[in-house]
Amino acid sequence: MVRDNEGMRTQLERFQEALSGRELDGAIIAAPEALSSVNLRYLSGFTGSSAFLVIAPTKAWILTDFRYVEQAQKEAPDFELVRHRPKVSESIAELLRQESMRRVGFEADKLPVAMFQAWSDAFGVTLQPLDGLVEHLRLIKTDWEIDAIRTAAKVAGEALTGVISGLVGKRENDIALELEWAMRQGGAEAVAFATIVASGERGSMPHGLPTHRAVQTGELVTIDFGARIHGYHSDETVTLATGPVSDELAHIFAVVAKAQKAGVRAVRPGVKSHEVDAAARAVIDEAGYGEHFGHGTGHGIGLEVHEAPFAHPMRPGTDHVLESGMTITVEPGIYLPGKGGVRIEDTLVVTDTGAEYLTRVPKEFRIV
Image: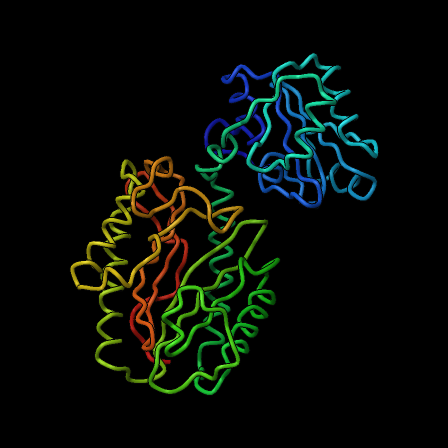
């Protein structure tokens, strides 16, 4: 169980305080095998594939089956363990009755309709959506969480350094495989996401997954990669040259690099997340490439690769005021169909005075 930076409270204790603030008797966090939830891991520390949490303001239970009893005892010591019946709803209903819970929160965006209907029939309580309560708590990372992301970024960066020499002649999917293997050898428990390797004209695809295409001399190669440590992800993107490139490609690299620096400078407490996007986008717009930058500038990262706060053109309900402890990527790009593209990405953590880089791979123009 991870402790926060203030008062040494656990995520569970912060969640329990928030329950009381919403006048809820308790909440259920579900992660059966088909519906695994990072929120369950965040609150309990449990990493198995099937469990349910029942959380009251001063008590908490983890319900799982025979396969995970020992694991749950070790990973979720703040929870009372219940080996649930074949019909899980019966075990949950018994706890709700035992604790006299009447208003119970649940994750409406993660619960299938059939399960909600079964719960409604079995529990006899008022089920109230939590409306992103756990996600709100996850916005501010603890020192431990930040260190996990920093470590993941270190592992990923060192792996990249070992595989980018001699790219010419290698197939994109071989580069991705070498990089992913190097991350695992370096200590990653898994890769953060499917590695992107897009070379030459394929660089115009923001999420160009690797193919059998061989990298050629005198082109750009975009590599978007990350590692996972203790469930926490890193995320960064480099665009590398395999020799002198056209003036146009060199120019868009310079524009993207300038835009990325503008976005990074905007990351500080009190700034709205859409303003980070605006700072980077203004540089690309001014250079005349606005129509070739069609995605958001960044996103938070943690137990999920993409989580709040989101730095993209302002949309209702998605903007956040940045606070110390939030993570955010800055990843502007320009994509020219038939010619190639550039994206440069770093992950940062907001500090009291500005921001700190968690990713460390140099992002300047370089030929490998």
